[in-house]
Image (cartoon, rainbow, N blue to C red):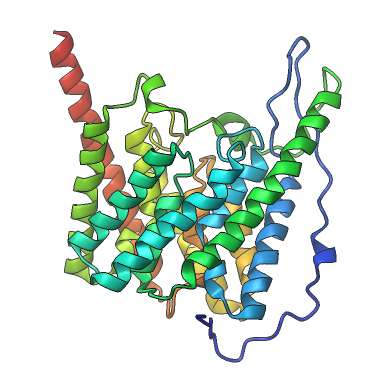
Length: 368
């Protein structure tokens, strides 16, 4: 089993499960006549997400199985706990198994091929094939497949490590969803919204709807080709610059949602703010990792920083939380990491802008 060794770091100390009791809920807004309100993320819901990730980080630190700290688990927990009626929370079985399957593909490819165009395309293509075959909405599973290739992880302990975190989140999501729905049903028709970030109330839409039902979505061939071209371009930049994290694993998730669901993805219309958000999350994650020797505490601070960035810039990009946590599983992160992230997100934003202009011109020619 791989061991995370960060030198003379302190032990878990006073951590206990008692510190992770569920926080109390804020109230949600409900208009008279609504059959059931949309659950909105209470301010203290962030504490519940943090406690979940702190639990997993503590297990990783205690056992040495640091790949239990699957970075995209932060994105999943942010959405599952914040939106218990969303697509991710509504598919607990797929939430548990999809990252494991894609992680297994990534491990096999990493053990068989060196990092390069072929291995990255096979891994990304295999992960997307898993999502398609299972009809799974768990897009962050793509990142789980690419992570071992980017980090050079060849251990067979990686898929079981992911299974621990994803299965734990899936198990928590079931009673969590039931409880939040009970709370929503017992709310009076007119209540005050307490502690809700305005960004969440505006941009917390269901970004994982089927592409066939969205006017802005392209055909499968076009969006698959767009992702493949972007991957090739990103790997080229990696080869030229030597900065492997230009193609950081959550970037493919970001690209997948943008090209797969351009009309519904909340960050597809904010391509100028997207690089800034990811850069700030990456910079904060790197600084907390460098400054705090205790892994559970560093993970909590990085996740809290990521959530603060998303809310202050008012852009709902759950994969950016994984960007903040990536230094936790990197062997020797350097200050180049956030700048590599900036380059990668600028590339995907620019390519998406070009793709959208091409799509618009093609649609205009078709309608003429």
